[in-house]
Length: 327
Picture 1 (cartoon, rainbow, N blue to C red):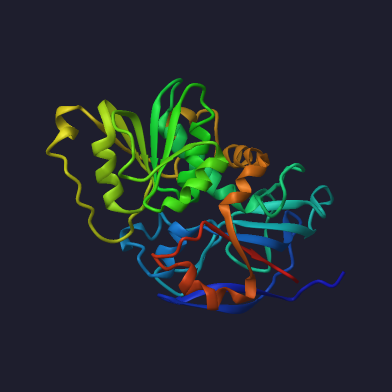
Picture 2: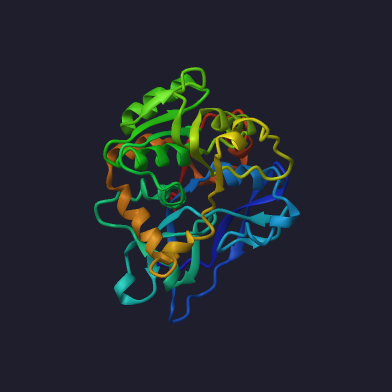
């Protein structure tokens, strides 16, 4: 097997301008692995903000991806949904299919501790959803859905759909996935959850989880939650202010508004959980064939500079777009 000397990676060269760059591929040391990428997934929410240069300066350090190269706003190599095969490294890992929080790149070298083996019953093509599932798990932990609760999830993107899917597995829950796009109904049905447009959404909810990325969705959450109910905000808005009405029901009904962000584990879980255990759980939960509905398209990696503007446009209806690597 020939050992590649170079790797090709996608960079945001400047806001709304992406390109492929060639870089030298180092030889792995004794505790590193060399990975040949099979697939990577585009996490539209965060990656769209990065592509458009909308990461606030105050968040530059917190929003760094584990193997990011370059600095915000640009040039920057960013991403965290890579699935590949190990071609060089410890014998126990050779030829294993693994997941890594690495940007879009065809070959890379990372510490062996940075990869997790994809379970045998999870297809490599579906494993690109692992980072999104990890975010959804954290959101569900923060929301703490209980038996029989009425729950709305606003925003039928990948993370919102996964949150609704997980909440619906709590016995007795009544879960509605809410989105302005009525075409998302079929997505909800395939995942086994209810669907509603904002006009149809039920009120008096025990918990509303907001994942639309739009401030209008957060305002609706305040309207739909019941007395003493809780709202979990999973969206990240990037730059700009968000205006919400706190002068009405929020105060009188003693509502709770809580942020959920995947970068930190819930405090009460930290004694026994770490990031690797959470990611292992995320990978194991991808065994369900129904989750393939969240992959809305696939393109060759080399086409990404041309496709990026369309994929990251705010009007895009893409869910998870998968990139395939032919070499």
